[in-house]
Length: 501
Image (cartoon, rainbow, N blue to C red; front, side):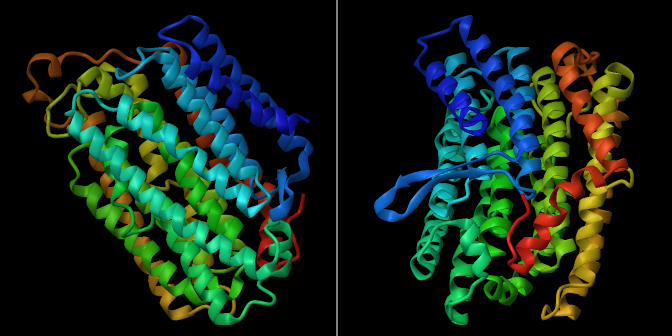
């Protein structure tokens, strides 16, 4: 019961908000109340491992089947709790221009509904439908509520790229799902995982895995399928960037773990070398791009490509540790990227742009709170030991160095060495940003408004950022709190023995 209500609350609230004409005080209460109720229910659902299973489309054998397990528990909590922070952050300032506040908040809740449905779905067709729910509201956030400092054509281009790329990925994913369901005779993900590719010819298994990986790789995104991401992040409002980085990208990697790894194991094993190479190229490409990128928001977008490369590398290892690393890395990047986009969004509001070439006053002197959380976010991005990202990246490299049996050890170890170079690049671009923004390199040349002190963050926005900092530190010091959630589940996916409740 709690699970069904959890999915209905943000959906009904979103419909109500979109139906509200113009501006209304009620919209704030509805949006914040719905997000808080959903978060509370998410905690209950995860704690009780709730599940709902009922017939839906009987003629096709599709069931209304949602449930929580060790693979999805952390992602459900991340989505629900982060949405509370995003809504509270949005309500503490002006709504981006481009439409009514009710439409803006309704789109945020629709994205939450689709993401929760994706992480909870236990039927392949239901998984696809929930996955697609997020596309239209995210397009609206980018197209209508995107950066009003850029021409309308730029917003249209960014939103158009987002839709075209992700719809292409969706089409490929649907083709792969239909082939899998047709040949296995069921769309139940638990049954598909238990069969572990049994009954599928090896060429067919490889073909299904290739189509699914290509479709989901666009959504991750893997290099070279990432070209839609920087423009979408740059144009999107702060709420859109946070949800895109912390939730939507995780749906792609989660899809690989849930839909590909357990159902076509021989296919993913055959394609593991390619997945590892694409992952490590993304790590290096993203790191090098960040070293020269001049727009701070775009820089963080490229860093996301690099971080997702570590997740792909971990999955390619084929081991239980690698799967644990991928799941941990998903959460780590979600929290760190959310913090960085909130900080950069705050700075862009005050500066009017995120151009690193403009000389500005040092944050450490003028806005110590913003400067402090920026440094924590950058430290998390470079994988500093003691912070959350370290464990995802370290475990990814560790697992890839000693991959599962049948994986090309030499190739994967070369990828590990190149991935370590990517860590050095991450340190380089993180320190570059800290030197320019936090320490104020060149600030003596600042003139006019750029030389003035930045108003420091406070109130609700400071509270949201501080909460993310706490998560980054706590899970960095005590990673077992997160690893213990997915331990048994990761083993079940690799061996085909099922997923622990």
